[in-house]
Each structure stands twice: as structure tokens, then as C-alpha cells.
Amino acid sequence: MKTYIIASTCLLFTIASAAQKAPFRIRTVQMFGEFSMNSKIKTATEEIKAPIMDFGINSTFGGKSLGMYIEGNYKSRKLSGLPGATLKSIGSIEGYLGLRYFPVKPTIMAGKMAIRPTFGAAYGIDFTLSSKADFTNYGGLVFAGFTFTPITSLNGFFVNVVYRTDEATAVGYQYQPYASIRAGILFGPSANK
Image (tube, rainbow, N blue to C red; front, side, top):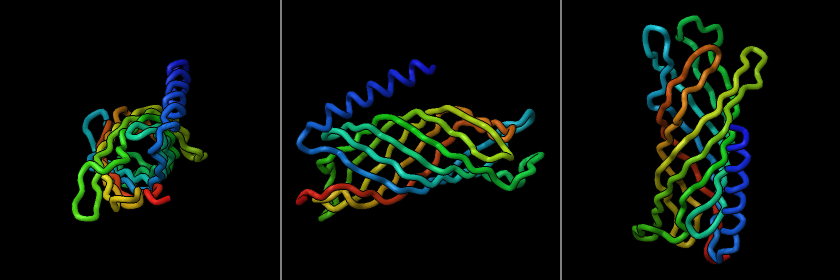
């Protein structure tokens, strides 16, 4: 597994480095909030709804439409109401590395607004620094959505659906793969700069 992560990281950096030579490059930063739609924990007898919220930042850089994707966020898992819970919630830090499709040229134009479809995949780590709970998870995420910006700029807002592909263990609870809605603001270069 460790060899796979190192090889994938080297490949991603090679692709992103080559893509930086393109005349219209992706250079974006997104700040977001993410709210789970159907996150559940699995017990021996049932599945129980367990809300999760994320807040974070990600960056994409690369060529005209394909770029390297880096993300870091804070995840809060609500534990109150779960069987045997001794904490109200637990926070963790996530980091991801992957690829993202993000067309610099607008795909759809509505008046002075550009709408760009975007999608990608990443793999990373989720861990806590709390002394009350210690866990580390590895997993993937895939996402797809739209960005809404002025035609000559990459500054605007976005909405994505995110699917976390792997089970995760936190404080003794087994979280199932789940989907969430992510929304936030997007910062990028303008065409006249």
C-alpha cells in the first residue's frame, strides 16, 4: 500500500508539472463546507444515522482541463445519541491528493455567467490528534458538480456531490461509505491578468 501511495504521488506531480507549461493553466483555491446526506454507523444489529460535517480548503493546478488536486479539511462527527457514546463529537483532520477535471474555458454560458462541470477523485488519510480518541483511516473520495463564475474569471462559487468510498472507524464506530453536499467559494485568476 505504501509503495502504491508513493508511486501515485510521483505520477501526479509529473502530470501536474508537465501541465503547468500549458498557456491557460488551472490555478484555483476553494474554501467549503460539506454536510453529509446519509452517513451511518453499523452496529451488530442495525445502521444508525450519524451526521458528519467538514470544513476545508482545496487547490487544483495543472493544464487546460486536468489538474492535480490537494485537499485538507476538518471533519466533525456527531456522537451524541449513539449507543455507548461518551463524547458529544469528535474532530479529525483529513488530507487528500488526486486528479480533477476543471475546464478553464467555460462549458456553458448564461448571460455573463460561466458554468463549468467539474469532477475528480482523490485518496488520502483521516486522523485525530485528540487524546480522548485515537484513530487513523485511509480512503478515497470522488466528486462531481458545477462552478459558477463570471466568463472572464475563475472567482465565484461551486456546488459538488462528494462520495466517500471506504468504511472508516472512529471511536469504536464503523462508519459506512456516504454521500454529502459540498458548497463554497472559488478563487482563481482572471483572463485580464
